Length: 186
Length: 192
Image (cartoon, rainbow over all chains, first blue to last red):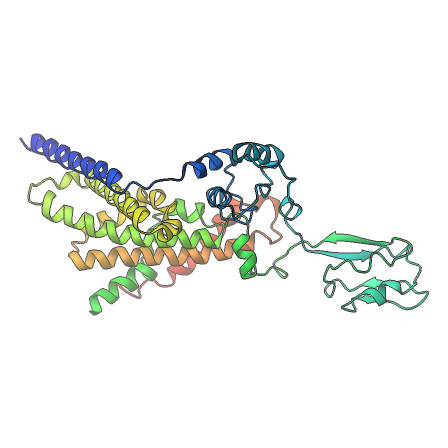
């Protein structure tokens, strides 16, 4: 008897919930934009955020409403861009530089064996991050270098190289607000 | 009033669901890589836990207890929580796209979590009334949110630290979680 009432109660409640959910899915149905769905299907669904949108779906919505060009998806590469151009009937455009790679903070270093001590890079440096005197080897104060690369063109012997900065706990910072907004996976 | 304050303090600090009761560990490890996702998850969990703790109290009190079917609690709670969350998700999707964007992905993820069922069952076990259940659920969620957000903040920094190769990735995360749990042991005895 008790088992029977348990079965009946559970079935009744489950059935009732099923009806409620079924009704709700009709009543609260949200019309998805069919174009957005098609664009979303082409995107690689990595949700990496490198397009500056928080995921593939928001980027698809931005493309559909004309707010974003079709060339901002590095994981999809050229194939995705061509498929999008085909779907939307627009001209294919090359992948945008700015979205091709994540900007990495860099500094420069001077190859001290090649440096002839001409002081040209010292004059070019806007933040006085280069130390040295005429006919003496120059060196770069890494903590002062902003990575502007202005010292590279004047160097007559090409002894300045760009090196990426490795992030360590001491140099780690919270991303700036606007960067946080576009950070991958955001 | 003191009673409800005590429930909150107890669930947030002393009997923290993640670090002391070891419930809800999967989202704790899974979505703590980024602070932003951790915050989204924390919001969704707060919502689901409070709601499910109230609903399961009502179901237990007005359906299961009168029919002497208390042994159906576990399956019934799972059913009720899943339906309520699914229903709310649909309503939110329709009425507030903004809220849906914040909570959307996380709602179904947290629905079938052990912390959610754990709160519902503990409410019954400890004989909580309606308001007590609501506060217990809310407090549990606050405690979960607190450690999840703290942990995500720590993990974001740890990823750039110079960790020995053998400890990189999940290993150092688990060690960090263990140390956090030890730290929370310090609250034991604050509230009975």
